Amino acid sequence: MTDQPADHDTTAERQALSAYDVSALCDHTKLLVFGDSLTHFGPEGALPPHDLRLWPAALAHDMGLELALFAEAGWTTRQGWWAMTRNPTIWEAIAESSAVVLGLCSMDSMPSPLPTALREGLRYIRPPRLRRAVRKGYLALQPQLSPYLPWQALPPHLTVEYLERMRNAITVVRADVPIVAVAPCGHWGKSYGYAQPGRDKTGAAVHQWAQQKGIPVVDLYAETRSYVDNHIGNPDGLHWGFDAHRDVADAFLRTFHTHTNWG
Image (cartoon, rainbow, N blue to C red; front, side, top):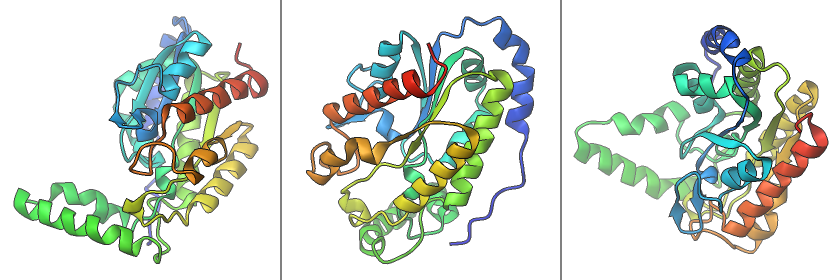
């Protein structure tokens, strides 16, 4: 897979600069979380994001903050960056943030038998009957090909590029806001052929970037490994049960208390 970075886009930085004066007038009462489906899926499927059994809501409650969650199923760091450049509610949430979690990169590390641009373009195939047939074929092939192909949804060098763009845009508005990043989780998902060859590479790249920028990291795999190894959680093998969500929330809370200037 040859996935090259887009031309440098300073849209979010420009919008962040324009929000600077707004931030000075804010009370900074929000926990801003960027994430994927791990933020809002439980053992039986998707839930309202403010359900206190989910780690973002539990963490916000424990920190005494209001949750501002921006997440979608399948989001990579690239989707997080794109959302930041386009969604005005994110700009407002940045200005009001007391703490930030960059909870993206797990999807980046997942196998992708098709180049990302083609895979993401399946939704645009017309007519609908053809789209459904192509998607069905892809989903049938994905678990068979994933263990044998080296490609992943986003290469590690792009993961850290988009994380850095997000970090930079946030700190333009909230220079001293504490930020915590994540290293990717594991899975036992049949839909991916039980494979995740990109996890270690993505995790190493994130840790290196975070160390350079002075950002603490919560290792989602380390925090949830016992559940993954014992197949405890959602039967899809990708999402966690509520005990894992609680452990992840506790890990973030410890990290904010001991490795940032929060509180």
